[in-house]
Image 1 (cartoon, rainbow, N blue to C red):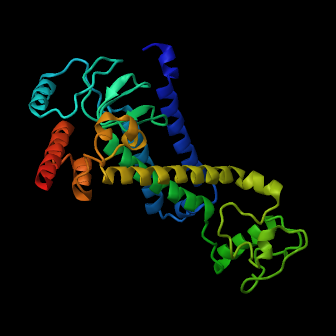
Image 2 (image 1 turned 45 degrees about the vertical axis):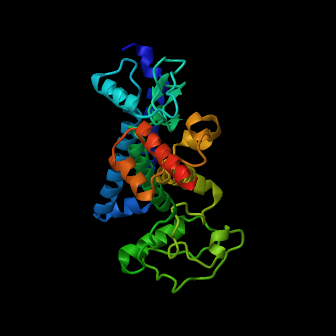
Image 3 (image 1 turned 180 degrees about the horizontal axis):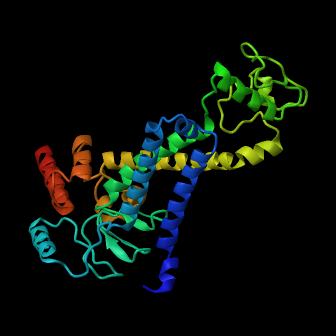
Length: 334
């Protein structure tokens, strides 16, 4: 392999995704989040579960990114020749197109991808984050990846924002709380030693010039519910929580994108439509001739065919079956 092949867009994108994934995970473990607290307390079930989910999402990403999305072979294999013979026996309501770029006979719902320079069966879209097409073979895994990735992102978002409050009772809890008050950097806060009694309830002191968080009437220890620690001065806050805040913003952005993508793809799967067909239905010949979606067989059958490939059959046969049903309905109406 040539050295410059390591700088190809696919390698760079997949490497960047891997580094970003584990970098965000490392930030969540190194900062004062629930993951670190569980680890220090010896409760390893939830941290290990989080790591397994992150690893699973990364493996799904690599699988979708590297697998064949359903390329149309330039030289038909014997099985494909048999399928073409079966297709020829079906009444051809619409002639199959020959791709003007790779000169292959395109099956119904296939499209040429200018990025991959190949025709893809049941083409959905070319994903730049995957650096691969999403088509007939990898579309189910792509939806599964979106669901798992959204779960990991929402959990990471929760961890970056919320930290369980430290316990009040016990020498360890009092010492830890006193240390937090002393190092909080709030002018006018009561000076507490490791053995000094803690304030009862939720104090309402609000020192002059202190940030807005203590003005809510919450003690820094009793209400330490944010890993971002907004009650610290800006300089100290940037040093202690700046990286965690950047991680929180990234997780928020990625969560919105993954959530919108998952919702849109679930809608398309439920109606047996691709992104390309939904956006460009006015440009596609086999959709312009019909008022509705000719491939929609109801929610249950659409989901079964998408995830389990049942019932099996070519799109050409499904199109011809739908056309025959429409013809019979029109003849009965006459």
